[in-house]
Image (cartoon, rainbow, N blue to C red; front, side):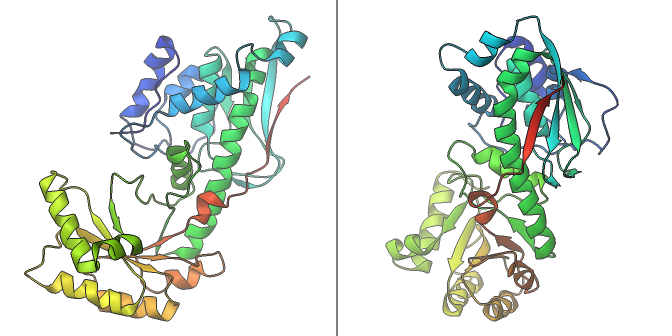
Length: 340
């Protein structure tokens, strides 16, 4: 089931509900006219968020808006700006990077005031340059300012993640860059969405969609063979045929143990699809890939930085994962300015 925007109002629901069923990408075109933000938010996103069975992006948006206004509202705007005041505001890039959060930004604006007119000059995944205005919004000044900080908080973080992901993904090629579950609590899908926008791919979304047999599982189960056998049995008994298994190996001996299991006709390993090479040297990773010889996918993890990721990507591994994409990100500097 797809992560979805459960909207704040019935009218908004009619517009934005389509984001639950579309995954196609829109072409990279510059907006030629402004449209109501509720209409903009109803369009399929250029890059769809990752699927999640219970996550609601709209609930996250609503929580962010509600924590900002408490039980009395935006007292700054309510006290200084007449309700009838109309304004135009722009989003300005104060640093260069990859734009992420365009579609989410429209959803935030729509949750505040569906009558705001918005014009995006750049879309998710496009480069924005320092000093570039890439969005205009027009309508109630109070509504714009109520949405301002929430739009910026989401967009600055997402754009920072997308910018870092792009740098890693380009350096890692031909290996595919993945993030991990090291995301901000409550922002799992949004953080991973930003990785997709930046050109990476998603690792497992949570504990539910992939088995990862790591060192602690192996120790508790009494070895790799016992852990794999128990996992295969559990998946079969619970009808989880689509859930795959990844096994962590920290040494070449553990790599050989996994290969022996894969080659043994008397051992059930049908769900084992990937071997993680954890904290191995580049030379060991290269040797491990040769030994595995395409039996399963391979994933390099540990000690992955912008300085090391290119060399790792040349070892032949299928994937490279790094928690830094989401846990050590620097927000991209963006500001909203009301035109006088």
